[in-house]
Image (tube, rainbow, N blue to C red):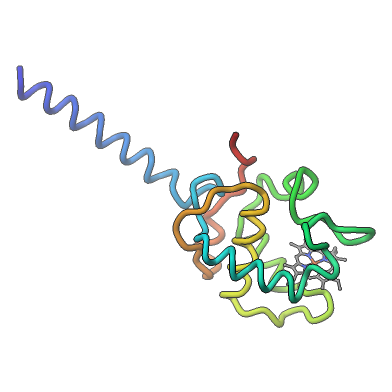
Length: 140
Ligand code: HEC
């Protein structure tokens, strides 16, 4: 009897771990950027992005918001890789292609934070890993 209870508990634990592991790193809701990355991104954003996208990421005129419902509407269903490659290729609009991969990840971390996604482990900067992280609507 004791042995049976042990195995039932063990199997339940193992499948829970597998379920949690499968989720981690696959969704923006599961803590995919580090808090210090977002802080570095905030500094970069103030230097290179805020003059167009606004200090609070609200956008203005032709320049889209980078936080809030309109931004999420654009990106939920796409991947963080889609966002980072767009950023890398087109921003800052005055000097596209000038951001290093680490800087792109820092900016993406700051954008995720500003959209109320939770911090967690460090956001990688290689395209393959980023392509596996899916935008989900932020949780409540
Ligand atoms: C000179 C003004 C300007 C600067 C500086 C600038 N942007 Fe943009 N950005 C724009 C405009 C205009 C668009 C819309 C056109 C487009 O998507 O290419 C845009 C689009 C974007 C988008 C796509 C938004 C969406 O939902 O499709 C992102 C992300 C973005 N910018 C991030 C940044 C970041 C991060 C920086 C700083 C490194 C930055 N931008 C600097 C003007 C600017």
